[in-house]
Image (cartoon, rainbow, N blue to C red; front, side, top):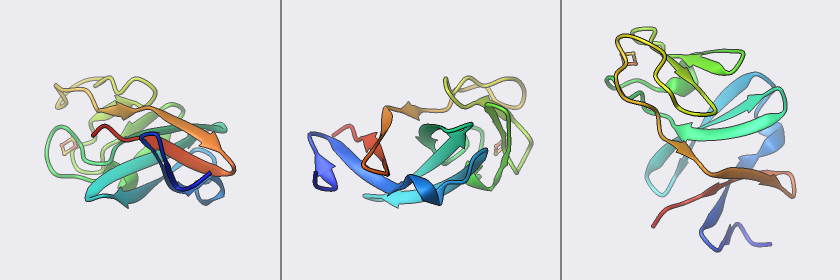
Amino acid sequence: MSDTEEGWCALTDASEVEEDDVVCVNLRGHAYAVFNIGGDYYVTDDCCTHQEASLSEGYVQDDTVECPRHQGVFHIPTGKAMGPPLTRPLRVHQARVDHGKVWVRVSE
Ligand code: FES
């Protein structure tokens, strides 16, 4: 399998994302946050929906991430904004793990 196939792109080696942690990966000019929650991988936009802040620099607790700027909290699997100051959900991308890599479905 190549690194790009039928709209899927390899973002990073799964082993690069420690359990209950997050890393930022830039692909085609877009910053993605790759989460490992208890061995399940999720890919969201890295940028907070409130203002400019990188969620990969935030605090992961259970299945939520707290933004480092104003402490807004998102539910990672659904992107739901859990309370103020957040009003808009986080974009969650289709993701899977295959051949040791985390893949994201990139919309054209
Ligand atoms: S920038 Fe993320 S909560 Fe304000």
